Length: 286
Image (cartoon, rainbow, N blue to C red; front, side, top):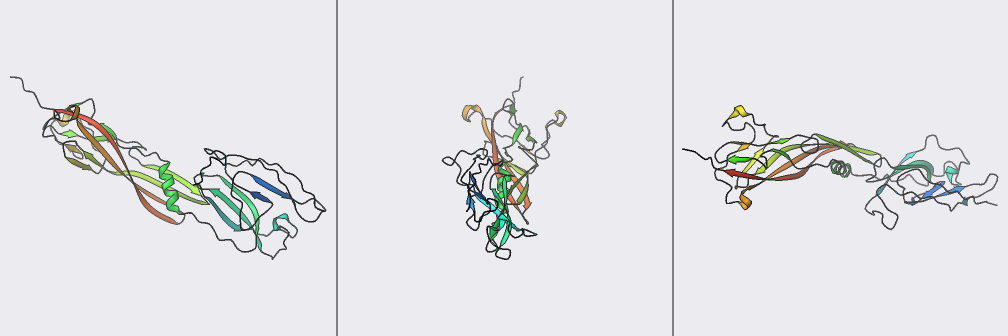
């Protein structure tokens, strides 16, 4: 006669796998709970424990408010050596009838959160794969890439028609790069590195300037010399522009190289920043 033992378990992990439809082991896990099956010593058959302990994934609510877009990804590895005859991992089957596998399940979007358990399967499982490009985008999303951190022109500055304007940006990991991040799921890890490849300046007077780098900071000794890397000359004042200022937009193109999961590729992200610039005429006193 089988005796059912009730086991209440609080599982110290951050997310849980759905019950696997292709086989079961000593532990049946749903997204938020686990049930434990226990054989009473000296008794035949299995008793099923109905106890459960729940734990919510970080940033997730209970089943009424969970994010259904997250996907469980499981991988399987044949247990070597196989458990001995009589082990609970065989689920009452004999060695040679199917096989026991080590199952590792994780949730996309929750890096490092996995459940590992032994399961019996009648047939070799189909391995669930995740697209490394999806992980690459997730790594990029974690970087918090920003638009250009404009150092010049300055909003508080006044600039003059015909005088060379030097344009440049401050460089940091989030505003210019390089910026590196990784993302993992289902045993696959992808690492991405992002850097600004160009900045396009819309000057507010109808002109567009494309700069391949961050620009060159101005030095007082440069006088009327054009910037060697990124500059512009206004030919008219901003007096007729809204609020008497030109609206300048700097748009960064972030180029991201990634690799992992046996693949590599490149992504592109666009970010922009805006600034208002006052341009006047040189006043000559006689």
